[in-house]
Image (cartoon, rainbow, N blue to C red; front, side, top):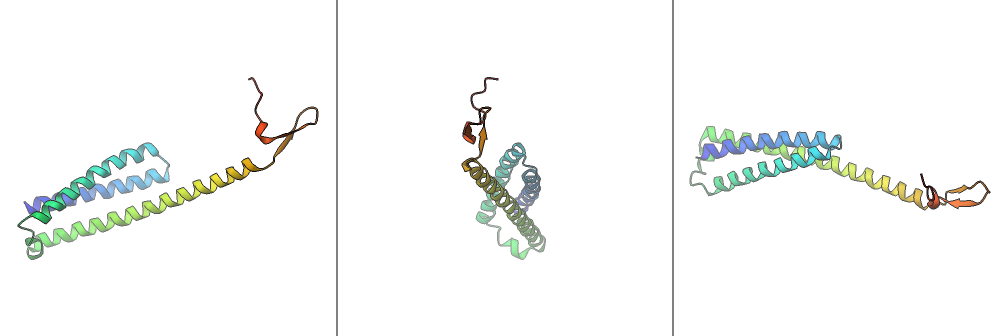
Length: 139
């Protein structure tokens, strides 16, 4: 029973690590469709990990995790996978923050450009503000 739960955690953490790497690629490529697909799969994997963790915690055999050498090694493997997932998740978070900062900066530049008094002149030499540019065309 306890070995099966550890196997489940190990498999799901391996899957989660793979999904986090896919998420990184999707973030770097601005692929929102892939991000949504990965997010759904991540939720499922996290639910399975959490379920197995709760079952391990409630197990009467949990004391074997420290006493049985084979189980102890498997726990170490699970902990290592969890650490790798956390590192990858932190990296993805940094990519998201950098992307948000770029969007914020671009938004500020666009806002500045919209507020400038850029002017154009019509064929009679009358000055028009940039807010009128492109209006009045019936193409």
